[in-house]
View 1 (cartoon, one colour):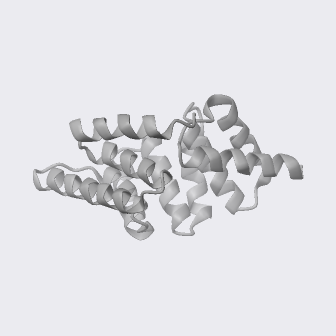
View 2 (cartoon, one colour):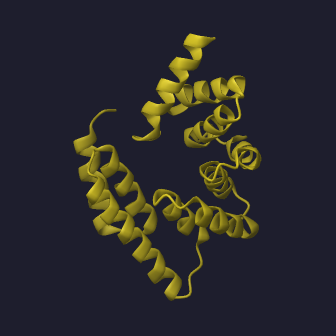
View 3 (cartoon, one colour):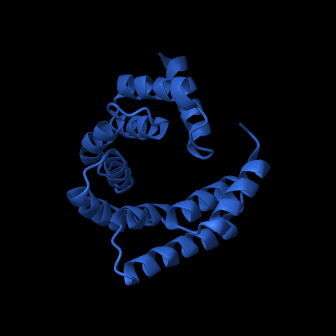
Length: 177
């Protein structure tokens, strides 16, 4: 909604109180949107450290590992971890992360099935956006347009990073239709 300062304060508080990989990743993303790349990188390192501690204590969460790898720009590791997690837990969130990892690795044809699986039947605007990005990469403008309209109609504020990108992509597609 454009209140980045308020969002940063709230997410910073949550990250301090509950420094899980997920909350630290959310904080890193918000810091990046605010133009604070060095602070975002520090939060990513903390997320990675929290994940390593969890694993050292016998935990297994390749989904968080895949999401951290994606945030760090390591799609090969993200694909490997997301595939392992999907083999254990074939849920929408895991399918979405695997689809995003495959897309980041340039494997859009493979990503499409996972992105569709995540987006079908889910009201999550992020899943619809991720399907739209894969569809656009494959040149499937009708699917991208449908999914971007779904994002707009369900929750255009789904992400401070991807929400504005989704709105611009929708405007461009509608203008060229």
